[in-house]
Length: 400
Image (cartoon, rainbow, N blue to C red; front, top):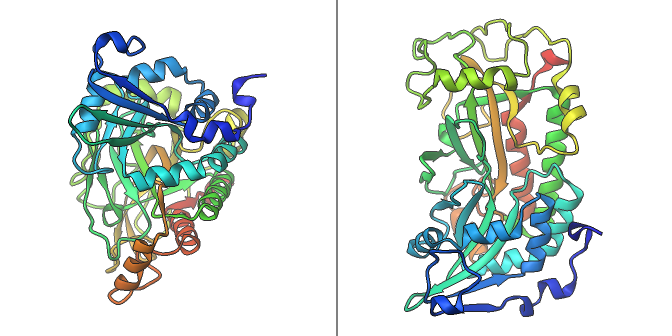
């Protein structure tokens, strides 16, 4: 029986699995990679449980530990002053590393058995994969808690624009974070709608419904959709002077022709010839391809690929004709159309509806729409989040 065929037992989740490794000298740290920092304490939470999750994605545990125990990783993790304020990456960029508060670690470990069962049942889950939770304490320093997750943007493609989306910004500071060399934009900067083949969209929304149901049952709220887009070529007909011939003026996309040429033939799932889009508040009609993208994708990838891995879409850049700080927007003008590849996943699901969040909800309800502020109970948050996803991922009816 494969290791990943096991179910989690109580022993896999007990404190007995949370042993400290004290590294005061090189002689006492024989299992660490060359160049690792010495003079610190290291703690693995539930290693057997996370090894099961790693096996689901064919990750070798020894390789994993060599990466996360590297001298560079430990130094960077322990230098972060505010937990959750920055992403770090393993040297091979497979993993993203994020510091956590102790309270967030507790929430994560409490939902770990249900999380493992969920991702094992739904292999196309949009939830970000969690590969390990650790604590490191260098000599003379405080403890730093961190989680190692899958890098959503791990791809041969350049992500031209990245977003961190919750579906509402009311009562929140629109601070932008850095993800590698990219800025994570928020809802007010989202001026795109994404059109998918109807069957793919239906399957995607159904999977997100399952994922949000799991988070709701676990009492989790305040999670985000991390989304990156790669533009496969120049706009399919621009109707606004702000769109330049090489892509998008005023939009921080740099189209590298060599990059596009090397990927276009293998990644393009649509027909080479697409009618140009025209001005209007609705997506224009396109000539349908001979083989439905949905059937093609589902046939070859339903068991092996995840929805958030280089999903092909038609993207429409819009100019919103109204006040509203975030989508959905019913009144807009099309600026340009693009073929894109999307990478996305649900991240940061470590916050429950705690007493502090309830107080925040009561306070901010006096200033904003109580249903639209970020701090709401898990049921409302789940429903609103799904509605937001449904609004930005549209059905491309021309592919029916």
